[in-house]
Length: 322
Image 1 (cartoon, helix red, strand yellow):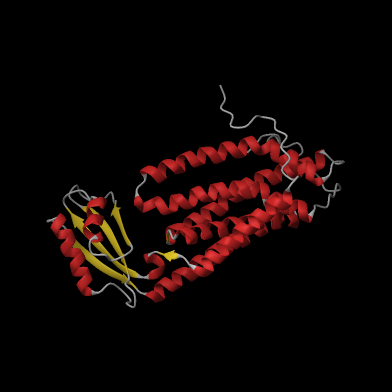
Image 2 (cartoon, rainbow, N blue to C red; image 1 turned 120 degrees about the horizontal axis):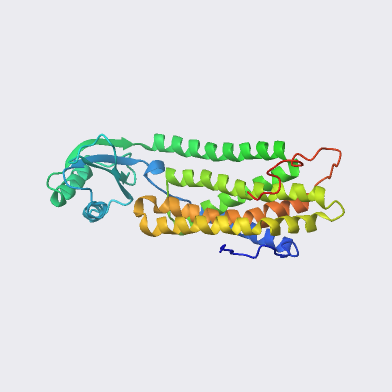
């Protein structure tokens, strides 16, 4: 018995109100941009600077216990992660405690570090403090610059890849969808003031890959159907293509969301920001592959050149859904 989230054959008209879909996307992007300009992002230690304390103890690391001890000091953003290494012995339980730099200071002061160590010693008497390292604002600024460059290069590479594989109209549609997804993801982090760190940059790059895969599946079917239905207009061909891949799109998105929601609920505070970004990215990525990328393609139009050979003709995988 096969599970079907949508019927195998559907006939939804996705472009009867294509101006409305573009308007909704444009409005959401404006709200995200305004929020970013007014509130900014709640940068984590990676981008704000701070101090990292490496600890070791014989008893297992209890992240909740560590956090409870340090939260009483009111030091702001704190990140606590357990370090796993196959070379560690049974009594080597290592943790990394990261504390944000306080206002007007390059790093956490010596007195505050002592307060943190005393608070942890009160809860874990055998704890040892192996090292203390600080990250200043200059390094944090370089990380922000590198992160922005990484996202831009990823989108640029997508533009070139789609342009070479399809036509320039397809490339612009795919890049518009990716920019839409990135802006809305940054916007939701700004609006909700969720901590934004290097893990979120990794999530953004993952979202770019996920959304691109979804868009390419739809565009592949569009290219096939443009040759198959030569007398039909572009809107009708796009509708047919999206309906034909809708079952695959929904099944992929829902199964991915099930795994991500489980991680969000059970994964703990360390990965919650990353998982939230991925959940949001899967939702907007699925939306954009249908209502943004394809709508931009409809708006730009496609020149049908039947003198070129069909690259999928005779291919043993031509009729198999990705």
